[in-house]
Structures are given as structure tokens and as C-alpha cells.
Figure 1 (cartoon, one colour):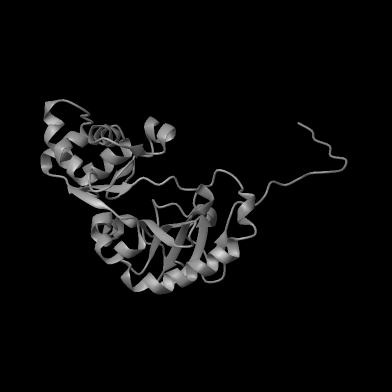
Figure 2 (figure 1 turned 30 degrees about the horizontal axis):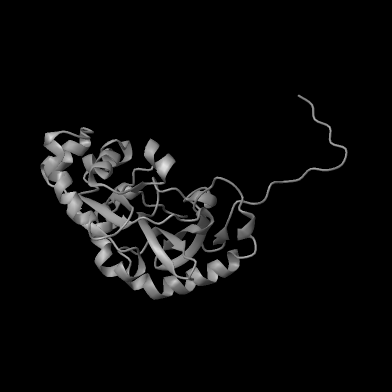
Length: 246
């Protein structure tokens, strides 16, 4: 019988970007951090976007953002503001600290993460427009890489058919290099294959709900015999004399 540990039963603190970054900095995007004090947290939780009360936080956030040139991607430890209108239109790219703070305060995902205690840092990375077919989730169970899934389940990406096994081999080699640095023996690690051939860690998630198993459908799964790499299959083409009744 397979026992799935819910993430609520795990120590979620180890999945904070600020917690694992020191060990895995060479395998992820350069990141700077701004520690949230209690007043900062209160302002984010209440969705306060502007005004005199947020000026101190914005000043400190500007210091964290000045480390990198150009556009940045700003999140908190365990949540990115992907549920905001700006993310849809700008893919999360921000330039000013004022815009970044507003982006975070408007995100329900971010507010919930801060309110629950799962996030106590703002994380700043250089902005990078990532190609969705190159984003995957690795499934690591009891110190073994047991599966890999296409991360964005929006559609079938034809280009993945010819490279998926090569990606799997690269991911296996990457896991062999970083496995001893991961914060837990079981996790779901989001990665990105760069154009230069590197693999970069985007995020580390708890094993089990509410993390999505993506193409594996469920966590109660025979991972030992049904792992490997999974992508959305191509659409089925129907030909011949097809009769449809309603």
C-alpha cells in the first residue's frame, strides 16, 4: 500500500526559497531577499498597495532589487503572484519596487502564503521569459527520481516528442548531482532547461497534496513501475466513416 504524506504533515519551512537557496544557489537563478517584518506582513495580508504606510517596505525592497539590472521577477518564499492580471499581461516582469509591492499585495496566493506563515521573505530574481515547453516537475520519492512531468498542462507541445527522453536523461544526471543538497528525501522540484543546456531549479514543493501531481494524476500511484517522463499526448485524429449521435 502506498502512503502519501500530505504537505500539512511535513515541515513546510524547509521549502522556503530563503531556506534552501544557500545550499542550491549554484543550481538556481541568482536571488536576493528582503526579510518581512511583522508590519510588512500585515500590510501584504491586508492588500495595502500604496500610501505612506508601505514606503518603508518599498525602500527596503528597492535595495534588494537594485542588485540586478533590468526587469525582475518578484515573489515570496512559497508563492508567486501568478493569479494577478499583471502576471497575465507581463509574465511577472517588474522594474520598480512600487510596482513589485503592488503586484504582491494584489495576489491572493501571496497574501495566503504570508498569512499562513509559509513565507516571510520577498524573493527577487532577474526576469527571464521562460519557454513553457522547457519547464518540468521532477518527482523525488525516498531519495529516488521516480518521475518527471510537463509543468504547463495547457496543450500538447509537439517539439517535446523528440526530446523528452533526452530531457529525462539530463534530469536524471542533474538529480544525481544535487540530490544530497535537497531539503527533504521526498519533494516535487520544478526545473527549467535553458538554451545553453543547463538545468535550473525554479521551485521546490512538498510531496503530496496540495502540490499537483500533474500528468501522474494522483499521488497514490505505483511510482516504482509507472514513472519516467510524461507529457500531454498529441490530439487524437479521427478518420473514416464516423457517426455521432446525441
